[in-house]
Length: 140
Image (cartoon, rainbow, N blue to C red; front, side):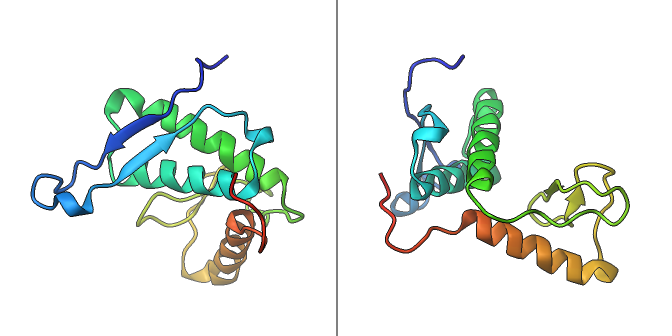
């Protein structure tokens, strides 16, 4: 069980001293994901992802940010009437991608390349749908 809800704020490490006007704060909450609106899920997921990619999260907090990001993604995915495309090798529907790297199957670890352009596009469409916020939904 998680500790009491306490937002964690972390300043970006990249060029804070040189450019204080570009300081960014990332907030992570412990709110139950099932109680969050879709806009709140997407916003917190985006913040956690950006914090991890930009390395704004101290090493001792990275696992907590990663775990929270996974929980948020799973809830966002559960609210979408769509399924991820299947892997042509193993049939898994779990895809991942590190910034700048090719998409990779979570089942068999196949990396997608040029010959998989159609599959890559379908994965991107699925991910876009998971991250989309219906128009007019509140951010609370």
